[in-house]
Image (cartoon, rainbow, N blue to C red; front, side):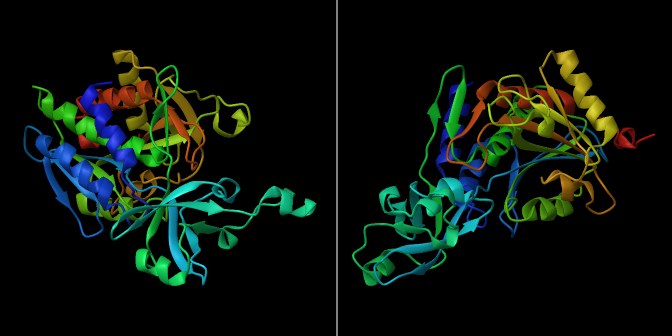
Length: 356
């Protein structure tokens, strides 16, 4: 991967962005894509980069990846200075206890830990149950409630402390790949298109959306504003090449084997065919999955925005989703960007996506 691209990816992952608190990451996205396109930010916080194509009355193509991540929000401080919290998005209570976290305050990130009763002091029956999130708490080392409240406000967001690390075979690990991986690919597509000498025959809109994890909210509003003819959502998906995942659920999907192209009701058949044929012509590896329903991604509201949009999904295989150790392959990110760019240059007519 290009050095500058990898540096952007690492910075994007490090920036806190729980749903509703995305602006640290959105500022980085704006800064990275600004040299390559015209950038606007809407009232929701969605960042939209536009590259105009060559010609008049061109099809509008919208790419979207959401920048928000799962996390927590401070809800209560007890007399001893312990912080109680609620989940932002789908946090797994199995893995939160014992984690290091960062509380993002007015004065900066404050380190803390999610404490739990030592196993030695637990009743045998309690060792077999999950500690509910509303009984877990964050210890920032405060001596009492007053000291904690001088540092932390109710409503402050919290993220896991896990950062970016490289594993073997181009695998990398971090919190927040869901879906900063998609956000990164959107930014890379804007950069690659802008640096090409060849103009697109479409008007391209690259969106870093917000609040996907709590109801596809930014994807809904940005699709309404952009009003695209064609939309491609870049997301992550469950990799099934780990021992405890049933391939009957999500098909045979592995890291480093290329981006995933799902089929199903949320996917426009001609757009899927164009992505698949482009991958074959460009010798880009892809993997296929089936989703026989509306997807839980920004492709869902985009497809049914206004009078309807021809939508598709390009997904990045990911292990350990919604944990602090989400793991993927850098080559899958690069191939996703290459596939989308090559496909964009093959789009010329909005009418070609009407199923027949």
